[in-house]
Amino acid sequence: MSGSITFIASPTDANVQGDIQVPGDKSISHRTIMLGSLADGVTRVSGFLAGDDCIATMNAFRAMGVNIDGPDEDNNVTIQGVGIDGLKAPSTEINVGNSGTSIRLLAGILAGQSFSSKMLGDASLNKRPMQRVVAPLTLMGADISASEAGTPPVVVNGEQPLQGIDYDLPMASAQVKSAVLLAGLFAKGRTQVTEPGVTRDHTERMLKAFGYAIEVEDNKVSLQGGGRLTACDIQVPGDISSATFFIIAGLIATQGSIILRNVGLNPTRIGVLNIVAKMGGRVERFNERLVGAEPVADLRVYASDLVGIDIDQADVPLAIDEFPAIFIAAACAQGTTTLRNAKELRVKESDRIQSMADGLTTLGIDCRVVDDGIDIIGGKLTGGTISSHHDHRIAMAFAISSLRASDTITILECENVATSFPTFVELANSVGLSIEKQQVNK
Ligand code: S3P
Image (tube, rainbow, N blue to C red):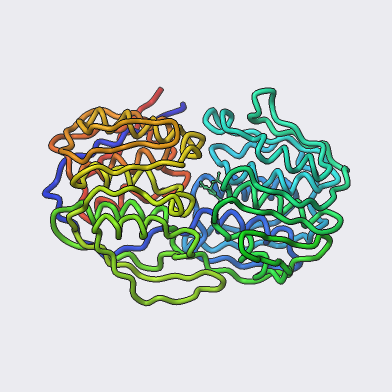
């Protein structure tokens, strides 16, 4: 029996209190499996995100002959690396569910294999653009294709020798950058990627941690193919994208504060902190430290009076996954918040500009949608029924908005919250929200 999940988020006294830790970073967790599988030796991972997306990556590598134990109840994973040339042909097609990171990064790895493969996903992923990885990988010599619409399935005919390329990314995308760099491991010569804007650099940091030489200069990243990776131990920090729901909840609350422990603060991911600081939000960082290759800190978030701002273009790629929650902050702020140059939001797990605009309008907030962004005029939120469009971050954003709503918010299609944040409802209720999860059988 297939089912769906509805969140019933009831109004509260908007007082939040808590000292919590969010689960491990999704982007980093995916990459531990990929690089750990391709490395020589045993990689031990702690703090792994046991969400559906990262499990999809794990299962893909298991299907290619890699022995992976875990995640255990403490989120430890052990990967028996098979070496750069050790993957085996999967016996069936690879289904990565809802996970864009799995399909796009894997495309880079599969392009360099001696076997053929086919990848696809769920209804949402099967609508997302794949040409952005197919195009550069084809330039490298791969025999790879997507559907006529440029969507999954992605089919790779193996045994095509790859050649390094010098590629200018047409959009700021860490997934495309990573796909090209990962294919570059299997290519002859040097592979270089130039980014139009700063995007998350977890692939670069982790390649270095696995002993692979990689050069980063300004907005150019390059590596020489044909090297090997050496297994290492990795502690995955808490995901700032998951922490964001609690940062925004803490800020829009009318009283209280929330402490968030062990949050990854990689400079390519902290757009949300830059944006809320400009909106007048009070977030303190303490215990700043380096955990392996990644900067980490604890955060204390205080209830704040927010004001609308024009969001800086430079912060857009640094906060790309955080906009659903930031839009809720904008709805609770005084004045208008303006976002532009954010067209990429239209090709996420849903069209996040339209999904958020529809939901905010239902809750009585005025907004104006443009092609590459939105204007949101702060106001008073009512209750209502919202479609999350099966998008985990839309679901969680509207769940936290209930802190400031005058009536109950019912959020439909919330099952994909499990892709990135399986414990979201329990943690949210522990800091003072009131969210009930209802199973809806179809
Ligand atoms: C990710 C990159 C981003 C982000 C996604 C994870 C990654 O996607 O939205 O959630 O792990 O590399 P794009 O590369 O499409 O911007």
